[in-house]
Image (cartoon, rainbow, N blue to C red):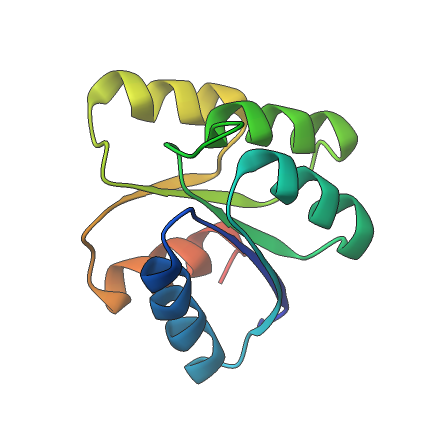
Length: 121
C-alpha cells in the first residue's frame, strides 16, 4: 500500500538512504525536512501518508514534532528512526504518537517491516 512519504532527519546521508529504500519499494517521497519545525510545515502543506522521523535534530526534536503533527492530525502515521535506542526515548516516542520505532543503523528489511506494520500490511 505505497503512498506519499515525508522523510525527516538532520543527516543528509540518512535522508538519501531512506529515500532510496522507499522509492525502490514503490513509495513517493514528497518532501524531506532537516528538523522538526520544517517537518511540521511540510506535513501541513503536503499531508503525506507516512512520516519517518529522527529524534535528535536542531531547532525542534522529533518527539515534539510528532506531538505537533498528531495535534494537527491525530491519525498521522509516524515511524521514529533514531540512533538513540534507549528505553526512555522509545517510550517518549510512542507516547508522543509514533506508531513504531526503528533503531539506527538498521537493515532495509527492518525499516520496511515497520512501514508495513504501521500501514496495516
